[in-house]
Image 1 (spheres, rainbow, N blue to C red):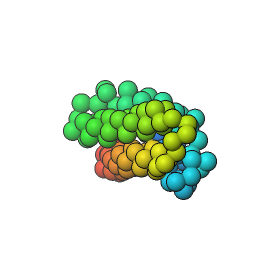
Image 2: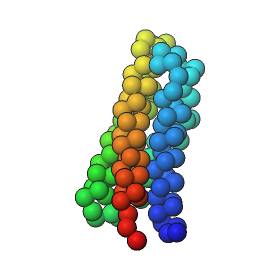
Image 3: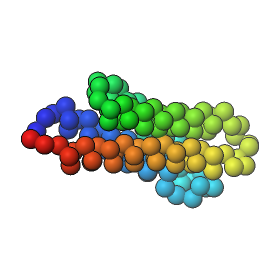
Image 4: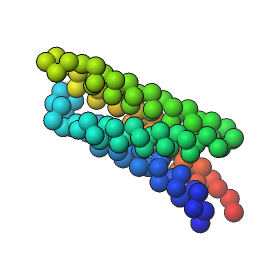
Length: 123
C-alpha cells in the first residue's frame, strides 16, 4: 500500500462527500445548507487540486481539470453567498446550491476516474 495514493484517494473522496453534504437538501431553503460546510468543501477541494498537480498522465490531466472545475464552481457559490445582501434572499440559496451541484458532478467524475484507474491497475 502506497501512503501517497491513500492520501490522494482520501482527499478526492472527502471532497466529494463534503460537497454532497452541502448540496443535499431543499435548494430553496438556506437552513439546509451551512456556510461552513461550503467553506470546508472549498478547502478540501483546493487540497485535492494541489495533490493532482504531480500526475503527468492523460488521466492525471483529466483529474486536474475536474478538480479545477469543482474549485471554480464552489468558489463562485461562496462569492454569490457572500455578495448577496442579508435582505435579498430571493433565489440566492437556489443559485448557491446549483453551483455546488455542478461542483458535485465534477467531483463524482473525479472519483469515477480514480476508481477506473484503480480497477485497471496491473501489478
